[in-house]
Length: 177
Image 1 (cartoon, rainbow, N blue to C red):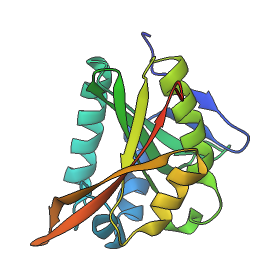
Image 2: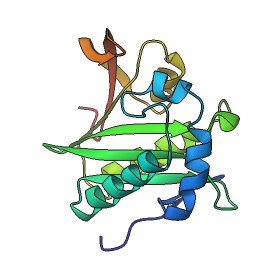
Image 3: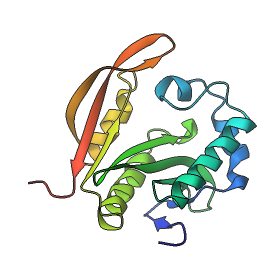
Image 4: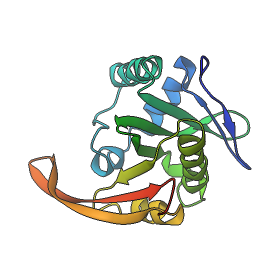
């Protein structure tokens, strides 16, 4: 796979993150909830953070270790992002975020189904997993909607703002056996 893949769904286009997306990403990330609900998005979030994110996503793709897709509407405006990160041993971790104005419309579920399909068929992963903070149950519901099942609760797995959190981990397998 030389070029970054492009995936189309009924309502979305999943494609490479571009520098021209960064002003909207910065605008979306001004809500502290993104930092509260994720382990990797800082607050405050500015140009430096956005440029760093773009840089590491490009480097991960070049090394074939990560595939971060911009989630776009059909006009190709970025409305979120979703990615798979190769953890070795034929498994990948999925992560995502969606601009708040597009929450509760099924976009992440639609994108996640396409990404899991891509991960199994194109990248030949056997297992795709995802985690979420317990105070973000909507993320866990998305995981369940795409066929993931709770595999384990990782005790005191993440520390955020001085507090340890038990983190649910959901998984789906290429072959259900």
